[in-house]
Figure 1 (cartoon, rainbow, N blue to C red):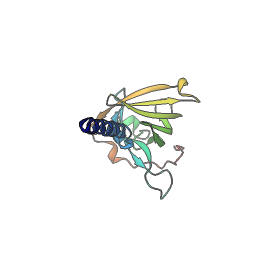
Figure 2: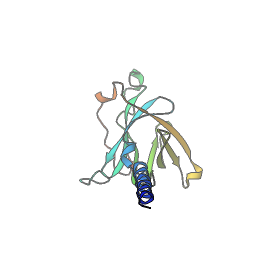
Figure 3: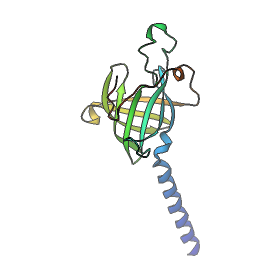
Figure 4: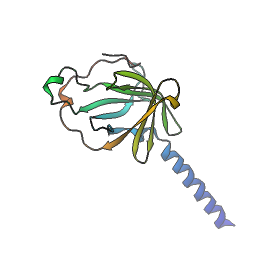
Length: 160
């Protein structure tokens, strides 16, 4: 009887530990390469409002494949904020937006981790009306964007 109580306690502890591991918004923090390989986005915690604690998740382009193209030197997306999500719940960053650099449009967005990849669901109205782009984690960022100054972008994603 005592052994089964200990075993049950271990199972409950392991289940809670597993749930907590999947429920960590900081697992999203890092560098992510786009599906097309055209850019790398750095996800990190950020404040939603000026002088607020960093409770949201924001994504900024830290590498652009066109960084060495002289014809694109003034319109690169380096240091552009492309994601923001304000609520982490059930393994998903919600109440967010994403900026599509190809279409130059803003969308509602949710971010999930699946199989070690970042799945960004961008949509208008309902998730069913959206598309998912899959990003892969990378350890290093090629040089280039660090030389460009970050642009000023408001909290709600308006900018440029």
